[in-house]
Length: 264
Ligand SMILES: [Ca+2]
Image 1: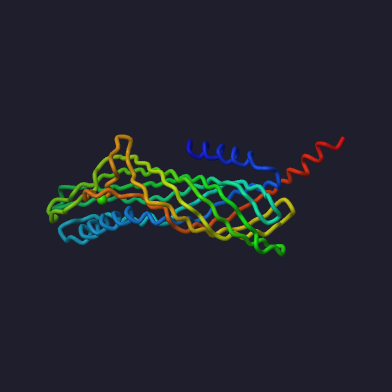
Image 2: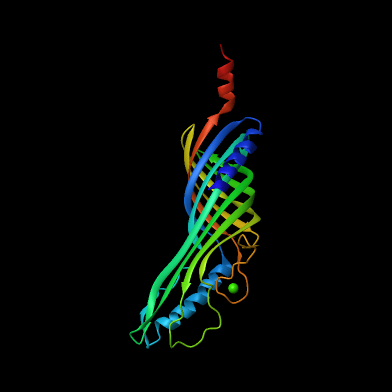
């Protein structure tokens, strides 16, 4: 959350440096997608092992497979200054979080029991600066958004992975224990947004954006890379994906405010 607080300050400072047109403050939430390609690849390999063990006749019990981490929730808060009737410049903070977990146990021969518990938590904060152009405005406003972003990601792991007795050897296994990894990278975002003005100062809307972010290596405080499936090859984080957000916007007319202050 410290990253988010810094980001909010940065957006406010950025906004404050722009000349005053109307200011529009927007908050929103919605489903977000992130490729997380190599991480989801590792989840796939872990699921192959679990599927194998779940169908081994000499084992009782079972462990559900892990869900893919491609979909999560996104939240955003931003502000834009309208520097021309249909052009706004500004910035936003956005967060994305995706989690996946499973737990269970296997018993072989009615005696030895092995535990499996995996919890994965990916949390990203992005600071995006850019612009918005309205190209249709007939009550509804349809516009184009474009921005460049800096993205900071945290990835937590908490893994117990005991191999049941009597199963064939496996070539790789996830490293047990807790891990906390981070990465940062740059990207660009572009998309469309639609606003329904309810009043001159208030609008609801939605936006559909594609986010392209360079893949980045995840490392913990000691510099160890994330190797989720334990195959000796580190997994990078790739946040590229589509984000759909439903928004609420307040428009504040700064010039009118100044005029009023000047009026005796
Ligand atoms: Ca790996």
